[in-house]
Image (cartoon, rainbow over all chains, first blue to last red; front, top):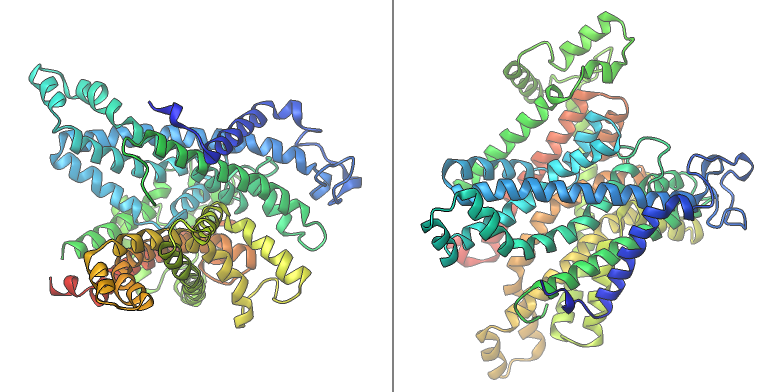
Length: 275
Length: 302
């Protein structure tokens, strides 16, 4: 690992945002001025004030509170999605790349089918059938997200299995599982980590989009996407409801993308080249 | 030939996945759609409408047949409205939106990417790349409302939502196209830098050709292939993004149709719309391959 090479504006901005995001998600109950379930009918759709710093939404829910708790949903969903996707993708890609033959053919044609669906469509379909819940969102995003890791790791395996140290391990009688786990995986970890780092902001956006469509979190749960959805109905009288959660979302995604770029540069053994 | 087989296989896989997904749901899907206290008659009718009273191959067959013959009907009592005409009405609206977004993306990205590559390392280059990083992080469901607040409410230049005139198309197209512009400008810049390193560029410069023709006639034509590839692949992202964009602007396309179907738990409508989306995407990928041949004589010969 060459993590000490993480530096520059992008890396510091990204690390700061990531740390803030995790901190807010963990400490939301301590930081939030009220509970996400609390309603304040007197303050229905009120502009920002001393009582509601970022204003109030439908039935007077506190926008700041929902943004802070929304960080939780985004953290839980994105990290679970990325971990599960990477796990499934590595298993499938490893099996396909190492054992080749018909298994490779079947597994890779299956990823082709999943890649035949445009963008977020399959996730919409799955959550629409299963109903809105955090677990269903994670399932839907993992179902559509593992293919990238599978293709990446399969490619790595195909390259690395020709290396001499892998040949040597095989000559010594190591099992396929041991070669994949002990010899190939550690040497392919860099690209996988970079892919996972970019996967986090991707999953955050996907969760927010699904919640915006009413297919993500259950109704009433604090989520950035759901809050923007609520706000779009009141753009004329209460634009703050849509504006502020989006700012939180954009900053988080931007920071994590910067972190991914910095991580890619740091883990890339080749000297940085344009572009 | 191999490409055609791959597309056919992907279409069949998509059909299989979509038509049978309801069987994989834990619990009784009829309970989910009608609630646990629905009358037995309605339950049986719904079961028949979505094909759950048949084995899986029967479901696949009857769903495909109904779709192809245009006989597929909504799966909600009283099961009357046909699905295909609804899709036929919505699909052109979505395609118009996606193509307009593509036009926005191309119009912004190509000049930006080419200039950034020609003036590599300059302030213009840095500004263009910073814009592209920001553009990727902007979610459409937020950019759309922000554009509405600024251009429809504060400035009152454009309508808030709906369809019907060219003015209605402007904000949705920008909302859908900005992310593409951001991504495409990076691709354009990279492809241009690659093309500018070629020897024929040095030759063209050496024989005294003016810088602009070298840039646009020699380098740009060679950078077009990777740009086209990305455009074809990104069409799918545009279709997915259209669902969100259509909700923001109440645009009467496939996304709105899909969300209405989901809200009403009209399972046949949802399945048909998802398939129509997927097939449009795959057809677009096929068209991209044809476009290669038009741009690159080397591909045409093969």
